[in-house]
Image (cartoon, rainbow, N blue to C red; front, top):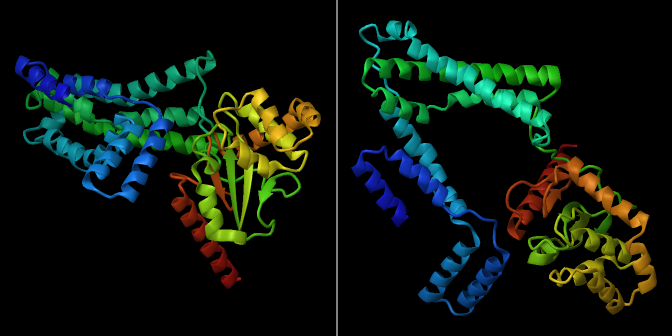
Length: 399
């Protein structure tokens, strides 16, 4: 932050537009995935605070929590609301106003500057973004996210013409906002916003009717539903509530790794049945998933899961075979099943289920067949399960 402040004053004093300092600042902000070791360290710091609450230990907890999340993510969380609700509206009010007296509107629609801005924002954005994406997909340089078709791409490309903040900034730099050309260009930006909105709406409507692109969201419903003949179920098969979790044995945030499952079990008891499906995507995930199914063939899937989740740092083949010995399994049978086609097909079934259900990472939870969005801590899961139970009771009363 100190570097950015110095940079901003330096650009202002040099006559260079200070927006460049903001762009450089964005590139300087560190961004990285959540660091599990820092999360674990923060948990220990909180334990210290719980045992000996003091101002010093509270500050240590704050610093420990901050280290686990990137600066980019923390600043986004803090600045998102004031930027959307205060900064951008103030910018718009301060820069988008145009005095239309004196025939400015008529002159604007006779100006090539106005029409150049309109064409650039409406058609230029549509064709530039849409065609570039289309060509990239056709050439194999990338692929569209699941649920997104080319109609959605062109609709989003059209809507990108709505953006006005950078356009107004460029107008101010190029013409000056109070000059005739500046006013004409600003009128073009405002007209383009309306036209881009209408064009985007039209493209999305056509894409929905002609190509069936009604949503770009991932699937929300568990597919296939829980099958007691196939799925691994902990708890009564006829329990009122069902929680399904897609897991990877190397996932540090899955419910068994964080202890969330123990909290849920103590809260709901026999009212909850818990189902796990495989979604291995870490390096040792595939072989660990197959090992659990090999253990399941000998009737100890859940003891195996509880045992191995406490040993996530040792999931090599020889480690898994050693665990089979420690748990008293038939090691020869376990080793044969580990590489068998049947076990591979069982894991592949769960992978296909994850893809059909919109689960692309672990952990992903489904509460009574609906994918849970957002946080997945024990408190959030408890609230979701309680809400589902209330909804079920309401339906029963109505029936």
